[in-house]
Amino acid sequence: MFEDTASLSRAAAEQAAGSIRRAIAGQGRARIVVATGNSQIAFLEALTRASGIDWRRVEMFHLDEYVGLPITHAASFRKYLKERLIDRVGIREYHLLDGMGDAREVARRVGEALKAAPVDVAFVGIGENGHLAFNDPPADFETEEPYLIVKLDEACRRQQVGEGWFAGLAEVPAEAISMSVRQILKAKEIICIVPDARKAAAVQMSFEGEISAIAPASILRTHTACTVYLDKESARLLDAATLASFSDERA
Image 1: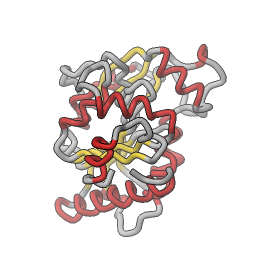
Image 2: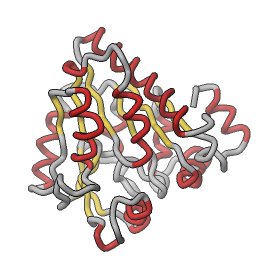
Image 3: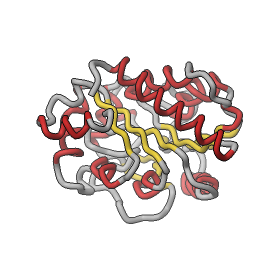
Image 4: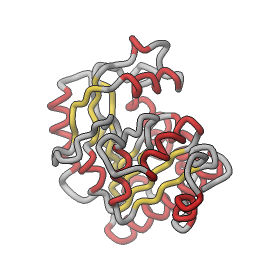
């Protein structure tokens, strides 16, 4: 657990940069999955400043995107990734989810590319409703499809309004393309970045409740190489025993 978002993000970025460097050193390239949203901004800012990463050898996959939202919209995750990561570091090989076209064809095409080789490290967050990517509760824990077309529940859509991406609930798309839960779990390593008091209830549900589709992010507890980064605000509802177990794992 960290004091604030800044220190959390720096530590997570240090681990992420090390993972990318090791993958490149060991196999000539790194394959990564990148999340978006307010919770990831400081982390990506720190990661793009990390030294010693040959970003030309990094292949990036998009975690999720709205259906029917143009890249020019402020809430577009394609726009977010282009501005905050791809264009900053010069990633040449990336796979963005274009929800303006045939969403199912996009999911199939990017999914085929994703399945071509293992993902070295996935960066994810946890939603206020406990979602993982855009897999809202009750999430599909069974499908092997790499990407799904999902309906966004009201709590998820209200979060997007609360974070300032949309002026009102009516503007938030009702559907999204999302990486599936099982596909996320196939990554060799997962780094989960979860700052802010808004996430405290979801963190408690995910790490002190049952592993359940009602708390999609709870499935992260089954992964053998998942590190969860919390700050004192997002961890404030956890009991002492849970906090101690997180401390043992740098989270």
